[in-house]
Length: 401
Image (tube, rainbow, N blue to C red; front, side):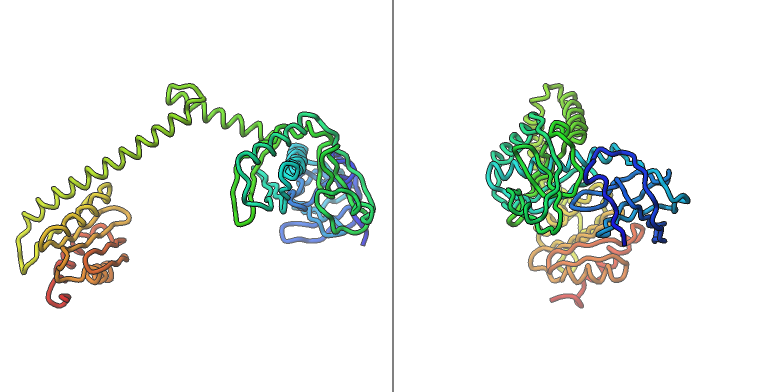
């Protein structure tokens, strides 16, 4: 089976090419088309496939099959000789991200011998996993500074080929297990790596390298980053968001984080104050309802239905009633879903978890609880009153303990 001549190996900037169709095979979503030569980069080494066209037909994916590259198309080309055209915007974006990754990985090795164990180039952002979970802000910022200094110096990026034996004797950032001829990507005076991906020819073309997110895992640190056009677009979005926040606060951009923190603290304090007021209101409301409820068989049963927006208050009321002598609370909340809160004063004769279980079994829904408090819901709103009446009927000698 003939090899596919991979044109991107030697010319990453090749946008159009001519090739001969060797064969086409049916595939689940169209046809696999094999060429004698191609500039389409396949899914490989953490870098996604190129897109573009062959004979004007969209290339959905390029797949590395070892010696050959299969091009997945919706239909097979009719001619034996075809023109290929790369989606250049996508290709150049991938070149920026991949070369940026080499520079950033080498920078982490320079500042602390942190090695890259994996790389992923995504549609929106890229990431590397480093072999330590102990990187602090200082190390992260230092690596970013070193990487961007290499970009600013516009160092040459060169591609060469060496026999595996000779390549293994070079100072590669990461040893390679490849056999035969090894493709090397060198960032002048900074990094040398075995790599089959597509790269820019000078570090200046990478553009700004911007770290966006850091996630620490067991033994690893995942660094999410953007390069070039992606970094520019994200910086623009960040500026728009920050500018809008500054407009809302009628403040300077640099004061927005402080104002947000202050407002967040005030909001938390306000929520805590509101909760305390609701608790006090629930206590007053509970006492009024308890006093209005007749005492029958050594218990005062309060049945109450609340609107959906007062669910939190309804639960507070059930707890407040449980603090009053002989009280039993059967509280329902309208909405989708509905809610039920059943409670009784400590030492009461009923088992509220059992009462609720029997109620939802009959009327639908789910829930459960203990002796003095139970909650659930999910039954139809139109049957709430009927369900509470049924629950009250269960508060008899049969469920006494």
